[in-house]
Image (cartoon, rainbow, N blue to C red; front, top):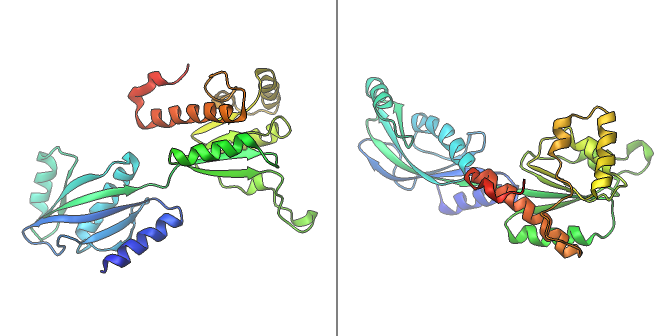
Length: 276
């Protein structure tokens, strides 16, 4: 296995927007097929995409490990014990450390694995009715500075040659559970957009609207049998109240709210940082 092959494969995954875990053998003792420097790349579903750890036994253990590490977002070192059935069972019962894993095999050795997550940056999806929008532009600038991706969903960009094959960008867009969605439709498409989003689960949904307009929107949604849980999840008026007036200030207040929610998800003990 060439180093360049490993890094090229990892780079391709990054470019394609896929999260993954890299696991490297950093130390071995006793009988192991894998040696220091052996590496694997594991998908977020726990499937080995590249490389080897020396056989099916240690590779079978990496699936759960990789998923745990990817979920936490923190690199960890694991010790994999390759023991016969009786010793493996005894080790599993007697050792409570989550960083030690006992695998049934005839090898008799053990290996230390450095397991590192590579997560795709979270995405801010800004929905606009079309045309230039300064708030959306400023959100894009700020998103990059805090390590997030941004995508503009322009509702005016219909795809198709005639009415029979037109594709609605709102219907064809694939939302992700980790998305932070900002609705800047300014009243024209609010209901259509919110009804579409009621079918999704996202990390954050904010609507740029006055209290009067959002109350009107919510009344329509209730009449159309949209669940109250979804309506209550909408952040509006959007953003943290900093007295924002200018587009850049409004964008900053929106990003401040997104950052506070994003950090709270990662560190629940910081719940005091969010507004009530």
